[in-house]
Image (cartoon, rainbow, N blue to C red):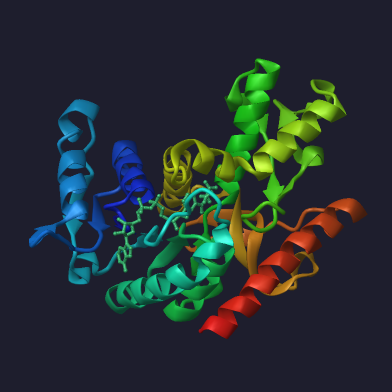
Length: 316
Ligand SMILES: NC(=O)C1=CN([C@@H]2O[C@H](COP(=O)(O)OP(=O)(O)OC[C@H]3O[C@@H](n4cnc5c(N)ncnc54)[C@H](O)[C@@H]3O)[C@@H](O)[C@H]2O)C=CC1
Ligand SMILES: O=C([O-])CC(=O)C(=O)O
């Protein structure tokens, strides 16, 4: 199993690469980034971080070989490619503000990846997530089932972590679902939130749950405010979890940005929905029942993504 991570000289990409290596299910991880020229010197962050990561193997006990490169020929015949290349937001920015900068990067990177790995599966992380996944799908020429975006695992992880803290329960026991675009209009689903099978509403009142839902929706922004750039540990771990589910054909159900062609009443856009992930990519979109309020919130979130697609088409 060969896995490529592009943007691996940066925060999220290097975390994805290291998490995959530590899980020890892949033969090799190819870490790609740009050559950076500064003060007449050349730096190779992907090579440096990969070398540092590989040197953790004897301590952390894994065999996955991590190799850094700036050359896409080294990525040839990758089974799975993760795209984290692009700018992160700074305080005061929305994810959508990254559109014009990142759309060309994601398109360019995708074309280079697919040239050397024509049958690969692509997991997009770059923001704005739902739009960048659409860009990668179009640029790749791959079936939509083989191109997907990571956001829902991260958003539900934040929601689950906030609930675990509030309820003084193990985060392992909290299961949850978030639908919609990866933005402030995402749709956490209290009706599909449980603690070891028990509805979360058994443990928490409406007011406190609503507070946690609001914090979750703005979870990315909270971290940008604290750090001056966006998060990477949880995003990196979440993307690695998708890669593992695909690589090991685990048939796990996760919320991921998937291409919808009528499911949930939505068409021709990528948005977060529950999917079954395995070796062929998205094996199934799990079309759960939504009540009127949930469907309305999902439609509003999808409208936001659709507006972004209009902007994308205008800028292309
Ligand atoms: N989907 C999600 O839930 C999340 C998405 N993100 C997004 O992930 C992206 C990366 O974030 P960070 O790692 O924090 O940023 P970063 O700045 O630390 O790393 C980005 C890397 O991409 C590289 N890069 C830029 N253009 C490239 C190109 N053409 N080819 C190869 N590499 C290129 C840069 O050299 C840099 O090393 C951002 O767009 C951010 O908004 C971040 C967290 C969560
Ligand atoms: O907030 C950001 O810009 C990065 C991101 O998508 C997240 O951490 O959820």
